[in-house]
Image 1 (cartoon, each protein chain N blue to C red):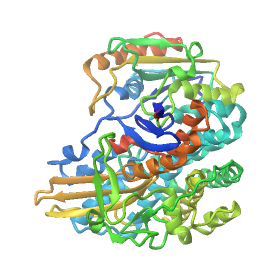
Image 2: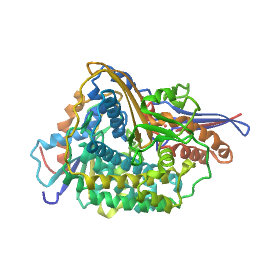
Image 3: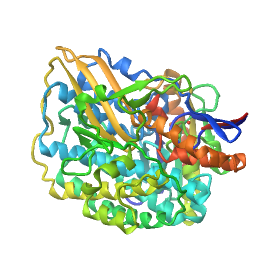
Image 4: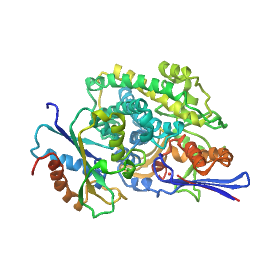
Length: 157
Length: 427
């Protein structure tokens, strides 16, 4: 592929239940006819995505699970520039949150940052037990999140 | 009575708190409270097939899943009387190198270095130490790439199984990693020089250091556990030598040596017990910053982690250099009744697994002792000794010092229950 014009990054892990919804959306996007200049990538956790923000890419859309107390399966668009990096505490304290990762990338090399970064967040309940697959309300949110991610890139579905 | 309370420990894995109570200038008690709920992994391993143990136990921790896989494989293979060939042992050491590299670099650069430079976290530190943070991220990336190449993915690898691996990588896949691993080794050497100029509090104790003793290499997976105070046992003697105690203030069990009591495992213990086994590159790097065994100052553990990172990178490069891709991906494992014992060195310290398996291959008893359970009593001892210094500090500074003393051990509370709220009480 030639240099992509934009990148969609799903954050999450397999067999992590609803916390894996970010990569579930990325995989769903992989089944759709997405323009070749859109790169779809999976990353297990936000710090592993820092490099993907500083290689000259123009636009990035992250997809990640969100624990915000709203109804499970709600899909929202988040503008990271409107939030304090410390607002997005990661579920694991041994990593850094997505907002922190974006802010860290900006601190390390502001000139290389994409012109636009958005986050598509899918509300989940705080994980409390082992679960391999995503729950029904979160599964129902996958195509909605995929459509919203593509919409951010000006692609109507 | 004065009480120092840290209600939630930051920059450690899991949820815990710390309370220190004073009567006058005397420390009355120190409690490292781990309130993350128990996770009952040993209980739900019962009735599962032995082949599931590596992947199930890997789920205990997202930062050191390889350690769980390796100790699980070692214990199951011991029970089934399986011996894996050298090329499998080398590849296991290689994926373990990846985990040490990514875990140590995360702790050194993102969690621990800010303590020495007076920042609340990596994000604030990055504003004035951009190169250091970039260097740390590049080292971590090299470790993650290694795990992904050999394990199928960065977190909770899927290519590890009892008897070896599901598939072996092509030599070219591993050789493609050499440039980044080589660059990471140089970055780690530069980082060690940078960190050697940090100000380290004067603090030493007469610890009992417990670690695997390597046979030919600085240890990742091994058979003999030794200490600087005479412990020398095989994995199958672990339960005779150690006991886990329940304490009322913590959901994590605390492990002690039956004959003596508290001890330390992890980088400092490994370094002190295996200094002679470091590769020339790592040994010279250590001596270059004036560090040699014995090192009894836990605040210097950040330097030891960096030396271990150099060691892991050097070992990884050597394994890749000699890897030819030949040999079977795994040894077949057939069920038989037996009990097996497995030891390996997780980034934070020794990880013990024991399984009793029935004739059908089902696990009917399991025991897992993670590093943080072993280090928790020593963390409390360190805090007890350091606490009088806190009385001369304001609460914010006292809290910072207490958290530093805890972070020296890079504790993983998710593993131990599986962190800090500091309470200082003064009568």
